[in-house]
Length: 401
Image (cartoon, rainbow, N blue to C red; front, side, top):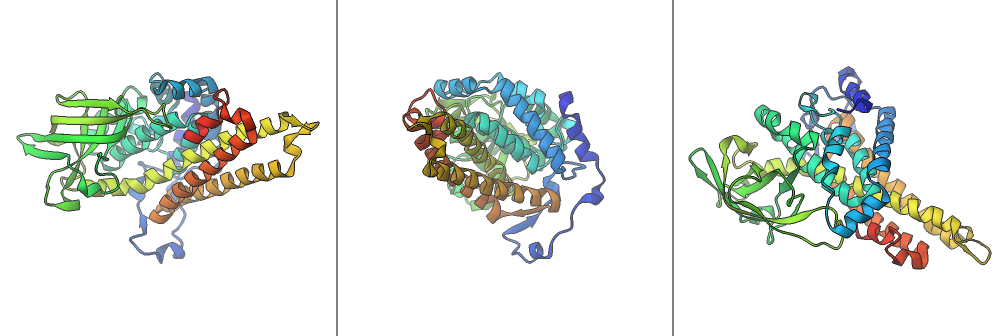
């Protein structure tokens, strides 16, 4: 772990007495919509202070200034390829194990901290931010939450160091949100399972070394017949059928995966057999919450572009920022960012400090932030005028991301 992040480890060792009590308002919410999960945090976790989160944000900003310049972000987009040399750098910085236990190399922090890292990386490059979240949240955090001690010891150190790349594979060409309709099967054999099928839209799929794969172990069992597996991509029968050429998030490598008789040992079942939907749904709220910080970074990047341009661009003898219409657009962009930021971090703070996970707020945070980000990036293009339509400015990339 980088020495500049040693102060973060101390956040996990503070006395547990600082944990805030559950509010009566939270207790009255329906159990389906509100869950309390202290087990959603690493061992010895204690919610970070505002100062610690501010220091973390400064460290991530230092990292992005050094490693993810505008040139890197533009090249990542144009090349349709993630810069794989970024993974060990992210690992060295300590970012890949934000929510993992310290004894496997993590920082033992929570979801506020994870959102901070996600926001600042996405501010520099939405593509890099998305691949980061697929690795650190969808893969690392799933293993942290559901893995056995042996699985954590075997896989998390490499994933957290950035020497291994992780992903999660649920979606198929004919089954996205309708998880139960998936066709990938897992047939019980001596010592494990044989997986057959395909997965689609898998972020980090073309590069991953380890993937959390969902497959049907009981075709007649519906939602109670799906199991999560830890699949090593070097296994015989596994392949990436193709890498997708997307409109946006182009630097986040996405692929279609093929599993043709892939053997997975019993030791690599994640959670319980036929308990895969529980594993999936327990992580889904937290995944949405952390991913909602991506649009926050994109909105901030849009303001980073539009604000100085509107003060430098002069028409009729004065900067266009002196016009009320332009000021109104800038004010709207700023307000949308701050409202979205408050929703995301307010929800994450409640998870960290009270252990309460509200499904409706985790989903609402990403819905609201994503819609506002689209509006802000469109306004950014309008404020740049003709320059917003050319690729030498990052406005079009921000909209596509």
